[in-house]
Length: 419
Image (cartoon, rainbow, N blue to C red; front, top):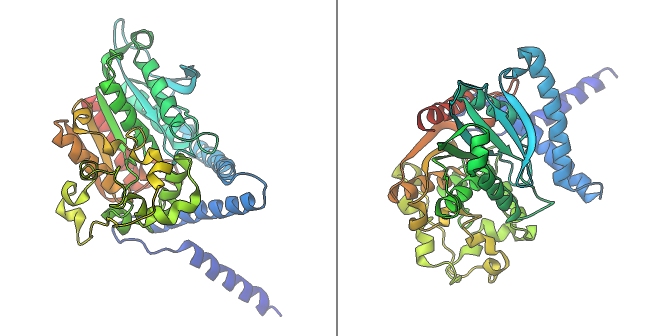
């Protein structure tokens, strides 16, 4: 009879290992830590989907509650381990800019007449998750403020399912215009020549789109001097780029999940996911997608040979009719900044674009870097050969990664030298 608990334990261990283990490229360091992190995220997603199906709560709201609880535990562990990581000289205020909630980080005051840098930051999370006030975003922005003597404004834009595109973009743009007003810059003693915009993933999408709009808006007298984009998502017409195919099963951002995030953001029916995965939404049949537009995301021209490898461009002859009419956001540069024309890109600020080899969004960032360079913009493409999506945010113990710490340090160094 004593054999039963042993057998049960063995079976449970095997089942756990089967759920956790996924094959990862050899270049990814600390693979088991990433597997455990991903298993936790997948379990949260599966439980949230079940609760949604049973009618208890929307699955996104369930995920938020779960991640908030996890962040609370991690914050407690981090506090006991390292004293909380609070920058004692940084003043933190939760206020509103043009009606949009923001968290402002102010470094210690300098000497009389001393002007500081300014940075607006948009967090990632697929336009559905994340917060300006919690987790690693709070830690990173405190660090930027303290180390670089910078007033950081982190924007709490509205999220899905409460809103869809273009609301998050409009929230971010309104906050940016308020921040760039001479009165606000003077209030925080910010040098108008040293104001940047930044964001990661979906936040990088918003940062790129806002930077474009500000650069061509003649009513805004102060412009962003730099943009720092961390593995930004920039287009939704081609989900078969080399990085989407190479990394479709690499955590923590799977190809199918990114498509789902896009459909949610654009307010579309999730049943369209197979059509987008097959690139049927961008077939030759769609006359609205002109050859000029296709050239703006033609990775066969825009990517270096190292990343094109043996992949082939997938352009379907006859796909699903009417998808671009149902989803006008697919062709809207406010949602897909990579589609902007060269005349707009030429006016954009100096750029830092961080990309990771094992990220479905790698090619979005690299194509944007190339297009900005072709338009005459100075670009630094900081590429991490052992990086994966999300690593920039994984810098808080115990879910910290060495590549994440390097990525954060590279970001801080670039801002130090360019902002």
